[in-house]
Length: 185
Image (cartoon, rainbow, N blue to C red; front, side):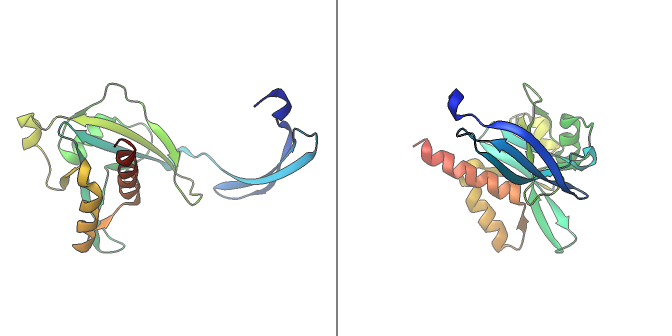
């Protein structure tokens, strides 16, 4: 953007404040010096609503997923290991959920807001899991599934036909893998 294309912020005004979102009106000047307004929703940050999701990638191009019973639908749901809350040790939590040990060169997360204006913040961590390690393999819990990355989308469909639910974040992640594989060809 050149200097002549920049917007000039003037003010913002709170129109409505709800439990988890605010509605604001921002006033600004456009590059032609015309004053304009724009309404937008802004989430209220709440530490209580932090969700941590861990993606365990194996040394043989697979992803680790866990199956938990979903009481609302009375069906199992396949998902990444998830936890709510703040200060957690990612590697210890992953071991408790899966029985496996993961490593990460840096424990930096990617942060995203969950869709539909929820007040939850989703932090995603990626861990590397060595399945050639026999101690690691023997300690794997029964609720853990190992799905190959190259057929993840097909495995999701197969699980649906068997009556399981698949968490939306797993499905979105698999769609992203499909698109990226098409660009790499």
